[in-house]
Image 1 (cartoon, rainbow, N blue to C red):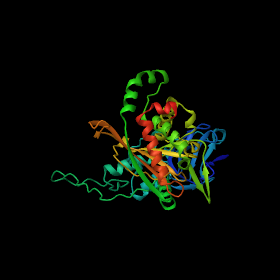
Image 2: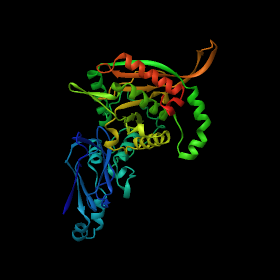
Image 3: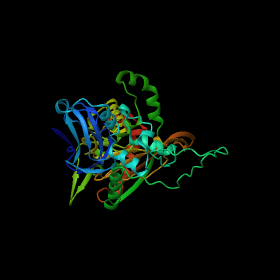
Image 4: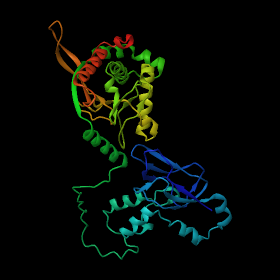
Length: 399
């Protein structure tokens, strides 16, 4: 009896996914709950596990194709059925089985009129993969390989090396995650009355504090103290004073959030994701740093869950780690505010005693929804952040 491999229910708001990568080939043995393939949604990448042990009998959806929730992806022949019904293969049968090709591989081979036996196979058990075919095409510059090679003509002179013409354009399909991200960012621009205000902050006190307590902090908590936890704590203090920035519009109502679930924008191999640190007001600096490190690590390996990407009330993005001096971040809809951090540079500053000193300065940017956040509140929010960062003791005393 064949067991169906179907697209699982991923989340209430997700109706489609894209087959990102098959981890098994037709004819391979699979164990119960062993990962078979990866699906990409507009929020996360998930693995689909084998519903039973047996052999992967058939792949019905190629890599790169879109599927709906519940769609049939492939078939597994149960282990018991395989053992009972499949006789020992004859040499001819074994040779035929080795020619089994995945649909994507078969399509490439037929399209370019290639001889599968002439292509080096790097897949498991010597099977031919799509990557093998693409690598072969690249090495031969997509020249078709005939099934039976013609007799070589006499060579009168050394052959000249082939001149490779590099394409001036290349079209690559957008990943589902990047497509959804583009839609959400454009939706935020079209919906919110978005405005950005700026300020600058002297990072001297924070840098001195971090330098002074770096080793004992890491020794006690097992994580390094960074700037992100300081800014997250400063944001909680400022959001309490300016609650509209922690609110959102729902129809003709404003929903004020009395909890502080702060999203931290993280760059991953597939695009920007914003995992959420929940209850930041109840966490200490070490706990925040640990959460950031954990979520960032899982974001880069595509292991974040839907719950970790939803429900944030405010977002922080740090373009400074890429060298950004200043930017205008786009709101993470339906949130009403996002704080942009930037790189730290030494700049000449006039001090209160009129002396001029080189100080480590950072530009801050707050983008906000002007429909519910007034300019006075936005400016006051950034000033409060500036006060907390320039005098970190304020955060401990909450003054």
